[in-house]
Image (cartoon, rainbow, N blue to C red; front, side, top):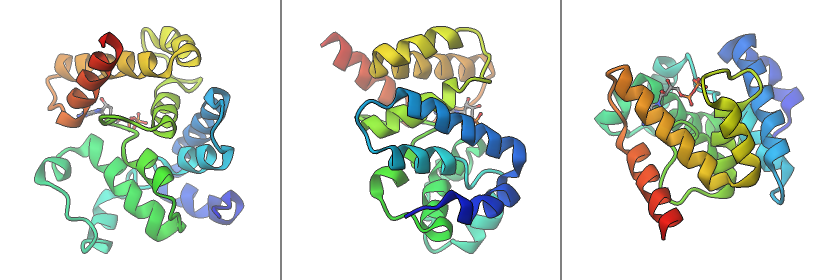
Length: 186
Ligand SMILES: Nc1ncnc2c1ncn2[C@@H]1O[C@H](COP(=O)(O)OP(=O)(O)O)[C@@H](O)[C@H]1O
């Protein structure tokens, strides 16, 4: 069982106090969104979702035998920490629950057919109380009413923002968006 007190110092050492505080806010928002899942899973996934951030090079080297990522992932600075985070949560923080690990892995890109835990962590990361991009309040409100609609809106926003900034879009996000759009329209 993950015990935050046991790992807090290590996590702060790794990601810094600002990012750690973001993780606490993600936890708090995710707990508010949670209706029926185990709070332990929510808390653990939220606290650890960014555990690989800022140390990608170090961890990629340390766990090279476990990191057979596609070139596309390795080259995408924004996305790699999430995929690597799954491995680091397992190896460095002793998490072996696949649902928690996948919520960490897909918290940045989303994916097709996300679990409820994945949706909650994805949304809490996007909407925690200090996020202040245009439209965040609408997504926050939507998240309490309909997780799917809120995830779809967030994916749309992420895709638009990546296009506006001229950045590469990791395709999983497009697939996730199309999947939800079809689900919603039937
Ligand atoms: N499919 C994608 N392809 C490339 N970059 C993405 C994709 N989805 C999200 N991102 C970018 O990843 C960055 C980090 O996302 P995330 O880890 O969720 O947030 P943060 O680091 O702010 O907590 C954001 O700048 C976002 O635009």
